[in-house]
Length: 138
Image (tube, rainbow, N blue to C red; front, side, top):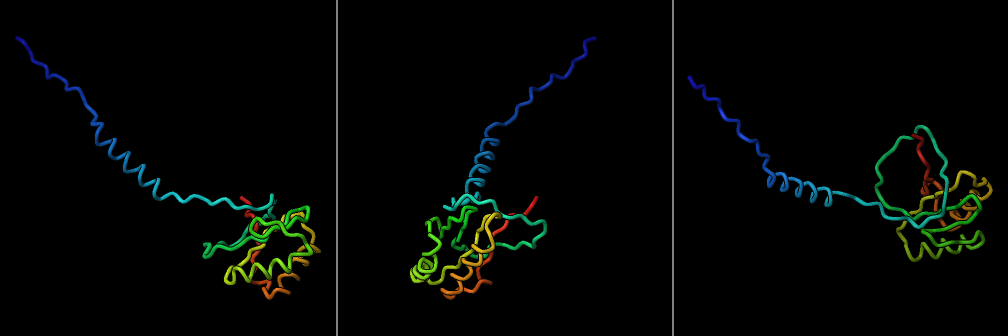
C-alpha cells in the first residue's frame, strides 16, 4: 500500500510589493525630514541648567553671540565692543522687525554682559525682549 505524502510547496516571498513599500517609505522620510540650517556663530560653551520649562520656537531670531575671549558677533558678523551700539542701530534700520537672542559663553564676565545690555537699551531694545540661549543638561 502506497501512502501519498503531500508535497511541500516552496514558499515564495513576493519581492515586488516589498520594493514598492520601501520606495514609499524612502519618499516619506525624504519629504518629512527637517534639516538644521547651519548657524554662523562663535565657538561657545553655553551655561547649562537642569530644569527649564521648554516651549516651541515660534520665530527665528538673529543671534548676538559673545565668546569667552570677548569676541562678539551679530549673525556671524564680528563686532568690536566699542562699535556694538552703532552696529545694532544699523542692524535695526536694515531689519526693523527682527528680534535678537543672546548667546553668551559661560566664562563671560558680568561686566561684558552689562556692556551688551547697556548697548541694547541705548538702541531701544528692552532686555526682557532678548532671551538668553542656554544648554539644558541631560
